[in-house]
Length: 413
Image (cartoon, rainbow, N blue to C red; front, side, top):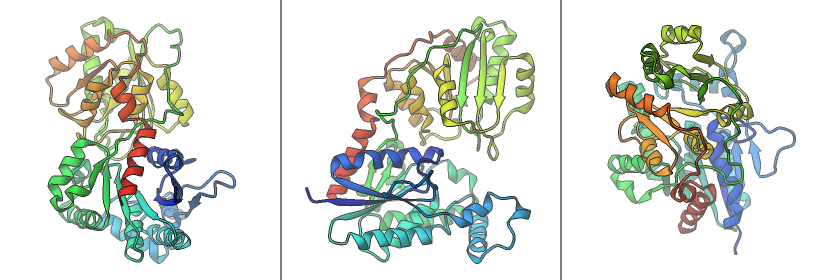
């Protein structure tokens, strides 16, 4: 088979612990099985010498935003431009300045392999990866696959933007859909929304879901001896992703001496980001009464996984977005213990849960308190015995099968 090269622009990549590192790493790991030699360009620094196929391009401007304002000193021109763009056009966008050196590095790889088939994959977020890929294809004739792990203008982000900011994102997104030879999204719902938004690119849009790595899959661990059942959420809280509705219901159920609620404790582990909207008075009361523990910081991934694997039940919070599917869902399904999900009606998360074969309960933000209480009371009586996911889930969300999809798409290009 003729050797083929794929340049992957992935801002986050292991050993970085950001959740966005997992999908490009799974592609990187399994692509050689399908005849592709990947070369990754990332902003995540390696530990030690690093692999030769993984090239780190540090984001010097991004590093400035990690410092306190008084420690930044005089900003270079690139940082000043990025700050203005982030303030007025692309709020919270990362990697805008980084896209320049990343594009140069990608062009160098393309030039080194001009005598064999070479393709380009950029995986968003952050925004800088698509900008870098766009800059590459403006200078080199190379097929570009744009991967949207999260949607932009058809997803939850659009609700957080002003009119001019939505217009700026839409202009850039439209350009990506025109310049890329193929566009990947990770849910059928997102694909349908994008086909309506960009009918000229309908045939370019393909669905490759997020999923799990069969070679590094989580499984349930024995539950430690304790006098209560533990319901765990391990992950960041931000932008409307909060457990308020669940905690309010548990408080009501405890007030009427519901047996399941009275023997349940909730553990929340993870950082709190912008506009999470936490009901702090309720959380303080729950903590004082002893049925809520909150650790508002990032813990090492191994520790977070262990906490989830030893829980009686798992809490999934996605009330603010119907199209997006958090990577946490696949960890929860792999563990196999009951899942309590706070999601909108007809969401992509609920569609997966309904076929995955793991005991679950979906609570919707627009339900009445009585309906929520009835659902949660029933959920708290489910057994904690782990259950194996359905064959449908095992095949559709297996990283090897997903990488095969990507390789077949690249073959066509």
